[in-house]
Length: 412
Image 1: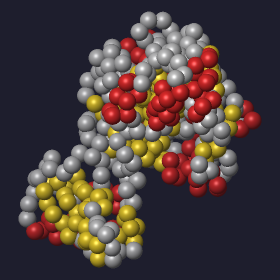
Image 2: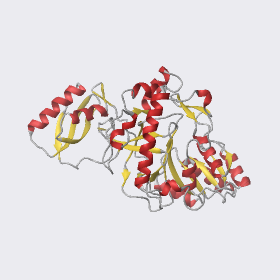
Image 3: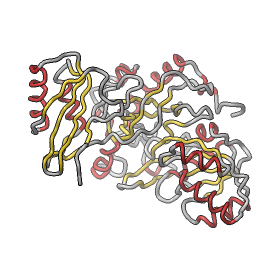
Image 4: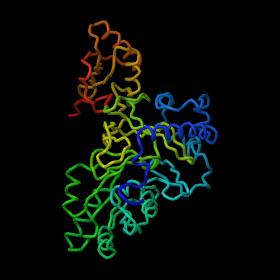
């Protein structure tokens, strides 16, 4: 853990990384089938030994975060996804829902040390950790990672701005973990009161968006921050490096970007839903749909880390919309497109005013003519039970923003 990189995994060749991950994937599926009730049933007919590529991985079903609430109610506490008894875990958390999250016993169980190291945290730092320690795992994600690196931790948690400022000034904390907005509040309060928090020069932030304007404001207050992306189910998924060119994928996950509402991977650069497979033996999530959207960036980071990069958080994938009193799901739009191979991409646009909804399916295709449009319109009605019009558009003309359903209605 010396030098520029956390470990040698970060600078592996793409071929070496992919070979190692695919070998681990097959073993993880075999392990999950044998040791969890959920995957034992879901993947019962899958030959684990045959899942050795991204193509074969893409043939497996996606389990989405939105499914967890019902799954955990049916089979508490983890929906049958846990491979060890709850009593064999290090900690159990309750996220809003409620959804229960599992933490393993080992050091840095959420793998956040890699993101802290990239943000400049080193042995001897005192980390001012303002992620919540209450119920949810965010606080311990950073706490355990910081201690794995060799840092001391001040468990500030959330709120109590005046006390946070006092602690930062008196303890001379050197790094911050938490949301960027709360860091700005602390630094502004310190400036207002004249407290010396100049030791607080770096930070790892997450939990909310970090627009360029907010990053600039925090930097002007004396602290440079990098952001990370993770979830309470998966741990770390991706993180920024000092190059500030996208977010580098963690070495302990396999990430796919799929078309919202489906399990179908999209082309590099196209926006879609982040789907993650972990190598965690205690809670082996396989093709777990986060509901968040992003896109893969081409090439490797200038910082020297060789793993794939994503653009970061680009919105939510759940675009389920009520139209004429009925819910229409992204998966239904995908189903319509699948019925017509001539259609390469589809986007349902809902216009009109409340109570007078107009539904138009825009389809990218090389074909033209009324026959295809009429056939797609018939499929649209059959799948959604709603009438709508179809517009055929040139390939590449629809926005690359991951939207499958666009609600453009007027609510005035």
